Image 1: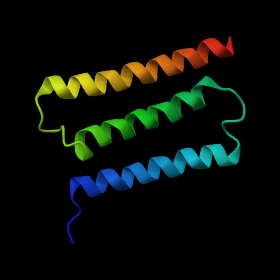
Image 2: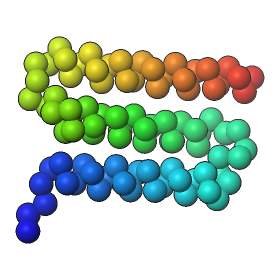
Image 3: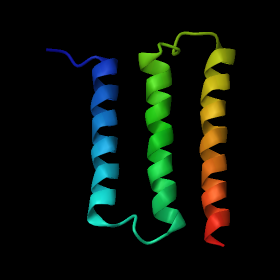
Image 4: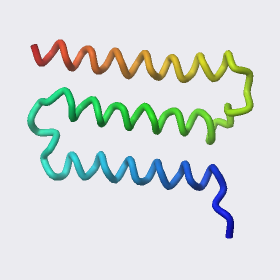
Length: 89
């Protein structure tokens, strides 16, 4: 049985979700550290890109659509990280 790209993305989504769950379950996120939170949000961004490209099937869409959605996702993720960083100060 051949592993298709969408199946590989799905497995990576599961692995990233399990890793972030593990971080929360072990208490690694209890201490407010920007580096750990940045890793979690980086994984969330990668998961979002996987969903946009494979499950929304925008890999073959016009480049403007891909750039708009991935850029919007990056912008929102950056704003959340900025808000978290400001809240720590």
